[in-house]
Image (cartoon, rainbow, N blue to C red; front, side):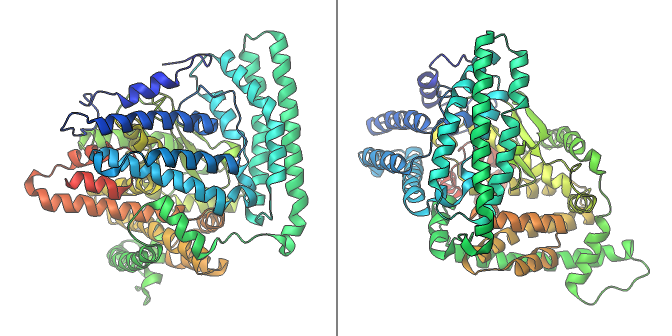
Amino acid sequence: MKHDIRHSVAAALIASLFAAAQAPTADAAPIPTTTPISRADASFDAFKQSLVEAMLAQNPDWALQVGQYQHAPRLAIPDATADIAFAQKWLGQLARHPVGQLSESNRVDRALIDNHLRGLQWYRSQFRNHEWDPSEWNVGEGFSLLLTRDYAPLDARLMAISARLAQVPAYYAAAQRSLRRPTLEHTRLAIGQSNGVLALLGEPIESALGQSSLPDEHKATIRARASAARQAVHAWIAQLEASLPQLENGGARSFRIGPALYARKFAYDIQTDLTPTQLYRAALAEKDRLHAKMDTLAAQLWPKYFPEQPLPAERLDRIRHLIEKLSDQHVAAADFVSEVKRQIPQLEAWVRDKDLLTLDADKPLRVRETPLHKRGVAGASIDAPGPFDPAATTWYNVDPLDEKPAAEQESTLREYNHWMLQILNIHEAVPGHYTQLVYANRSPSVIKSLLGNGAMIEGWAVYAERMMLESGWGGGAPEMELIYAKWALRVACNTILDYGVHNLGMSEAQAMQLLRDEAFQQEAEANEKWQRAQLSQVQLSSYYSGFASIYRLREDLRTRDGERFSLKAFHERFLGYGSAPVKYIRQMMLR
């Protein structure tokens, strides 16, 4: 359903989400309800509605991402003092709703709100990444969403773009004032992404104006504001580029955040009962287990691919030789994105045929080349709409290969070979991120969707890979099993790398040895992962943490329920809790 931006839709949308009928629709996940709503729960639901409205108004860019467009014309300038005061105000109101008087679902919502608000305070007062990570200052996504989501007629969206453009100079003036000894790595990322913002504020806006029926004077105003906005971005880039010599000569902050900040960020972001060190040690053990499994598969496949050669004496050499041989089978660089598109319907058909969970055919998924302003961190990603506009398009972003050097193209294609590309598409699309986020958008609890837990989201995508192979995807071929084990090894090594870099001072040489020699990654993939470890913290640990928790929950329920256990019912009930941390979903499902 499309809305004109002049209409205030927030209250109606939020109210409808909170007051959604408790009985699920025909294709919705079965969330159980048992008792009438209590006075305490009714009061807490009203509090949640007010909080969500306030959060959307406080952060209009986030509101756009989750599909609420009332504040689309406003470009908010990050303000640590205002955010800290906001969190303090709402924590005070949260304290008026004691945990013991709430239903189980609302107790979880309360914990998520508490974690979010306390995390906001910590990020702004202690982590302060807006001061040392210039890539945090990026207006691109808001403009991209307004150009690509047709929630309102083009002319209305262009008027919102016009209002935002007028605020860009002030935004980047604040960015220039905010920097306090940035890191070299984030500065380089910001320069690259800001050049992408320049491109976005040029031809795409001009093209939209060409399709618009706005009066000429409005078009002239938008062009003038776009020009001023580009000048502001140019000035921002110039400041960053001017700082490079000093940063390159020892004047930069380290990208390593250290054990103390890492532990706090881990607690707010992952929301697990494990400590970072416990998860790290579990990942090391998983690496050893996977090496043993891969060695068995390599020995099984060796006579097929190397009939005239003796089996190497060293375990890692045996595995490496087989993976290198299998990596010869891949698509051409020019066909990479089209091959991604081709596989999506096959995955959807498999999920339906195997009755793994219910897919919603009405929620569009489109594959596109990653927008320029979003490149430089990961080669593939999902941009999904939030619960306020669930019918909007979900974008599967894939970095194109045609502009990369030939050697880098080949390295990437060997990494995402015939088998690995299938696993990537399972992870990002079906039944991974895309499917999970469709379910999250129709959760009865909007809090569990809006304040989604990254470890649950990434963990589900990793679990989906395992589940698909268990259902027979790949035909049980040892080649698929070996390449899948390599992917699983990547998940464990993500945690080892993340922890090692920020807690143990892991060097680039040590990281590359782990990624190339022990995780068998191609040069391009290893370089990208090292880059990502420098630019992010904790997020790389979310994959293994979430997967291990989900898989353990499934097996515990299978043991408890015996013959009554239904895999499809588990999937749909699990996904029906939005994107809540797995530890809370576990509590609710085990009861």
